[in-house]
Amino acid sequence: MATYKEIKGTQIEAVATDPSNPVEGQVWYNTTSNVLKGLKVLATGSWATGGNLNTARRGLGGAGTQTAGLAFGGEGPPLTGATEKYNGTNWTEVNDMNTARANLGSGKMTQTSALGYGGQPPALIGNTELWNGTNWTEVNDLNQARYGGGGAGADSTSALYFGGYYSPPATRAANTESWNGTNWTEVNDLNTGRSGPGGNGIITSALVYGGYDTTSRAYTESWNGTNWTEVNDLNTARYSGGGAGADSTSALYFGGTGPPARLANTELWNGSNWTEVADLSTGREDINSGRAGTTTAAICVGGDDGSPTAATEEWSGTTPSTVTFTDS
Image (cartoon, rainbow, N blue to C red; front, side):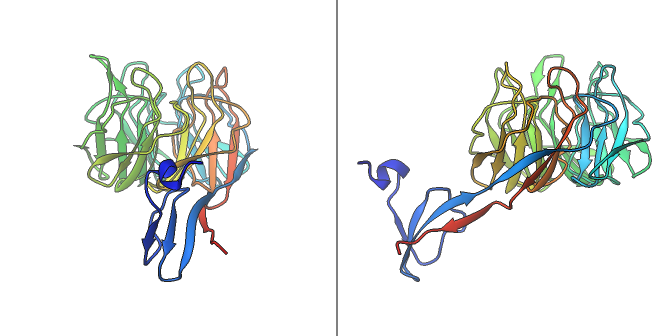
């Protein structure tokens, strides 16, 4: 029979206080309470059908929450700048973007304060537009025009855009740019350039996962406001999925493509590891890239399940938590 050290690579530690960030399966002995403890991550949830978009599309951007969402841009075809607001039940058409585009960047943000940037109409663009809850206004461009990157940000005054694709020459970008409400500034690059990654968080604490360089990737990197650090991989390599989550310690990644299959897989990040949870009802790629929602209440909007779709699915999950076991 294998020993604990052979399985986990370490001995059972004796510590005075419980580890602050243990990993699933880790076992330790607390010398203060004289109790043997271990960690198991509890994470459950499910997807349910929500209201359909008015305009079916893929490669759209988005922002907001499950009950106050925003979807904009994308491709039907044709390319569109259509913008819709979600109240948790229905989507309502509001004012369009100034530039129709698909595969644009966007961050978590809010229904009344959002950004859309980059994309392909079909040429690469660096245009950035600001949403104030009623209208879109053109503001300063990205430094590197590109499409298909990952985004993060709390509102229209702070955003992060990372990865993507541009040419010539054909490049799977590692570029990262930070938005301060007025201008984009180039900051430190991803460790691995890629297009189509998932992403979530804010400009001081973000996560990027999956993507494509020469093949589908499971890579995950964490952003601390200055640098990207490689952390544990996804269970299933893929790109062009959707993401949600508050910061680098919590994320939900759903859908995407392998290829060749459009995937329904959903994975939950607890700050250390990815855990497979309940699948989408329908596999799809080119999903809303807006990080709309949290790991307990998210939405999957639009995308491509064989053709552009208007379908919305709503995620309801429990808060990722931990339990300890004892020897008693």
